[in-house]
Length: 280
Length: 214
Picture (tube, one colour):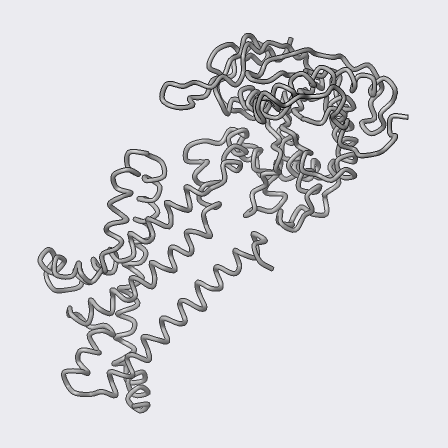
């Protein structure tokens, strides 16, 4: 087991003595080199869980270990790719990618070379000298992925990295991410609310429930993954995950809209791709 | 009058006063900027400082800096130091307030990104917090400059030791209105040049680099 979570709990101080429990008794293991997704309804604490693993936030209870070492602080071995690209607007693309390397005390020449190689991997070598605002949304995300990968992290933590992108860009990036993952053999933990994305990309999908956030079930995905085309196996799995999530969604809606809300099974339009008949 | 302006500049009377004033201003301005940055950092970093000094700064900022002159004269005597004090104090509070709000408004995302790469402490300040608040710091400097320029003129007018303000006072006591107006023109020109050329350019180049305007 590479990344281990044992009984992780997280509460936020709501008022002075009112505590809000966001995560309750989260336990799972991830093996080295695995691509694992976490799906769940909004507000179930997926992102919080990711921040706990990254060390940006501290768990109230429980243990988080990477290769046997407990996680205390954020470190370059567990880099996060955020939903927004988070590129520094005052630095060029190359400087952005080099940021972490220079922090690790890599000699400048070597850092520059590595950053350029990484930019080539995400097909942006022509934009090394550009400033972030000159790039499109998809390009910015490529840079932010390059910036994380150049650190050669043990675990890549991705927090809905493609949520803000359009469908075409997202599909291309899925493809490229898988390619990079196969090449670098980095362990990926991918948080998303898009079930199809989770199923297509990962080897294992963890489904989370909400209020408080806990692990509901986990599915293993068995299919060749090109990250773009769904097949009968993935579609079937999508349905299973959706069924598992439906109960949770009802809980969220009840809480938000009141108890009289009645939720009809199967009333939610599936998936976001919007392709009518894509399951035929 | 134009003749006075011309001979004043060539003859050195106005030029000398001008350099004297600018020298003082730069000195005071640099101290104020450094101090403002430092105080802004403290207010941003420590909550207790924010609650105490932060409030005080707002109060102090509302005092026109020339009001400090009587106190400065008592402390330092009527001379170079007193004027410098007034110039510095006029700019420091504005600078502090702008720095603080700049630091406080650095998006959490940038800080998180830097932290996941292992940045913290002084490195975080140097590579993320300060660069991210540069636009705010520059507008703070612009304001600080305007405040200290006004404070300097008032201080020189009342105090002693040369400078453009003092030259104004000389012109008045000698009844030389042409000199007074020449000096006013010079003051306006310097103010415009610094504001429109130096700061506007700086501002614009940053806006462009950040993609805030084309």
